[in-house]
Length: 111
Image (cartoon, rainbow, N blue to C red; front, top):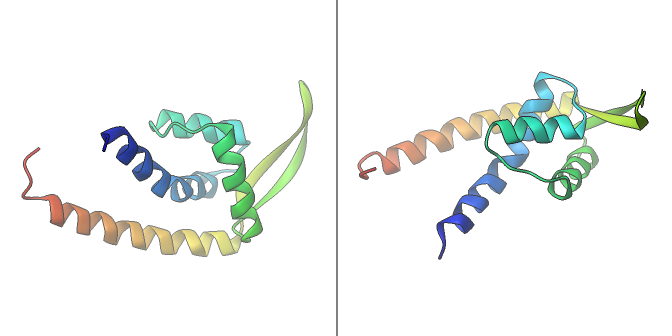
């Protein structure tokens, strides 16, 4: 088994959480989401992001609005809904528990 496969699976596992967290901070255009994820070293392509955004929207966690663009077609800007904010809070709690458990389980392992 290659480490790259495991690293990719770990990133995929937290991607939804990261997207919701970014959209809780501000309304974003999908390419802005991709840029922020890349800055955080979570490399994502449009083919990964758009289905996730659609799934999160269909679940009621996101909403969007259209904005006219001076340089092309209208742009879709996403933001968290109140239901999405509640879901993100649950993910925040889960992440804190998981991070603590992983730290405890790996504390005695050499680096």
